[in-house]
Image (cartoon, rainbow, N blue to C red):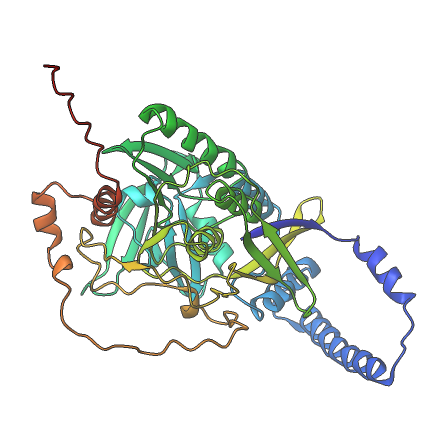
Length: 445
């Protein structure tokens, strides 16, 4: 989840700090320790600069030091400049070039968090939890995330071959993907069986407005008689905090949506809903899975806590941290984790995720049993939740759920391509009030 921010120019910041007196012995000791650490850094810098086998420029060394410093913090803090900075800006605006993948690195390997819906990667069958080991036959192990992503980029219309290792399969396999200029449509909607289905695949600058438009469009298409709404947040990697708040607000009349808590105990900011439920208090089901992250988890958590929606599917990704994008120069920016977010009831989803009210497996995915799910807790150096919450095992029952015994092949014969969506539709139809029977008038005698 991203926030936009700006800092003082570095020189101005240094000047401001120089005027702050050191008031205590503890502060003086801390300054001394910091000075020693900086002396060590500059000593190493000078030795590398003077003695490395190949001549290396200062910018490469400093950029590498910044990247290493941020990588030591958590998986989501990073520094972007030049092409990476442009990519960061266009992604938050909802337009970018590439394959349509959200990826991370794990022990030197590139791991897929989620493919963007209807992107080249999604259509090619790449799934969350896949490892990308080679690009056009070149081994990726040991590449930085920026280097790997840069190799996936290219001119729209060109094709790249990805070698995939999928847990649960015996052998790697190759997938050819044609690059596209991806113009994200973060919100799509349709009416199925008199139920409004709103698919939100990202939280870019227009997501809130487009969600409101979707609700109004469904009203018009159904004459205001929709049975309810399904909000599909599966494989949604998140995005902008303010858009998550806007989307939540569209379904709520009042109450807290989310709170942000920073380093200090009193560093708390709360965001509230404004009057006006555009879904008219009708039933809402939110679909989530292991790819539902960040801003998408804010929406699911807010509506779940307010008992405004039934959350259905699988436990979400568990990214409960806020990244501020701080522009540090004309073509550079720092993406820094600055806070954790909490749902209205005070839950932190960091590393734990949102548990669905009703767990429904994606039976129409033939790999769903054998393919491990990648979540925040699987990433190295992930932040831990500040809330010490223990999930106790209340009941042990290994009996297979009779609702979820069909195979993907059996569902396909029945015409069901998306089992979770189909289950949500049938659930809403069961929740709908029965039609009003009007008794016919007896003829007068």
